[in-house]
Length: 376
Image (cartoon, rainbow, N blue to C red; front, side, top):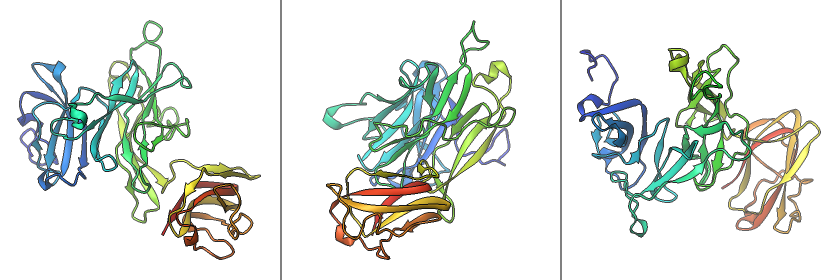
């Protein structure tokens, strides 16, 4: 596509050719639509923020579609979500078989709203004859957070390596005092946090610390961090790559600095390495809630030190060790494994437990447990 008379570009969205709208290309989102009923020439969707030049208060998010992600066509002649910014996310949720959107709202500070669609072209929610079901607030600051902190840039994804697990990577915004106490309005610093959910509605912050923290003062990424949508597996599938924008200026950069200099950078995380149960040098243990065992083997993603170890016992629903599968029967695991199968005196096959309610008893020393899975 040409730009200022030149076709030497990779611009694919012809915003200037579509009506009297002002487009915010930096506030857009492209996703592959996995709705099985979508025509192939609409397989890729672009959600982009736009405002009518003559009536900007009616702005919002428009939907475009493409077969190849290069040539785009508009699907709607009006926005499907009200006007807001900073990485809204929409995707087809195969668990509920609807489109789900997460976006920034004010209630009264920045929070994350959620809404469902049956039809992304119209924004309709057809259940019980309702149209455009009202959004609900699903994430924000609470009584454990400082009063001058809120959250936005929701970045919600479904984690394909676990069943019905939703991940959120919001930016936590620490507000500086407003004038006259402070020098500039709407100013502060942001880093990236982490939350998890089983239904996309009730969210838990397993660790309230930064998922990606600020860099040292005076370096890139020392003031603002915003993560992008998507989890990219490395070629060997041992890592997840996540890309984020990092800035060395605070939120009110236009007034305060007159510039915005940032970078796009990458975080490398081990597979399933979002959080971990960690035991110290002297050791520790924990038991899971009751689980229904379906599979043949127990797989762990674990990292012990050279002198650390982990063992697992299997208990019945009453909490009694199952004969032959107690902690004392378990073969010690020592080392750093993305995927290792647990064994008990050399035996790995657990198919006799399929369908039974069990609890797992982990005994660890100087180790980090990232995940466990029952697999066939």
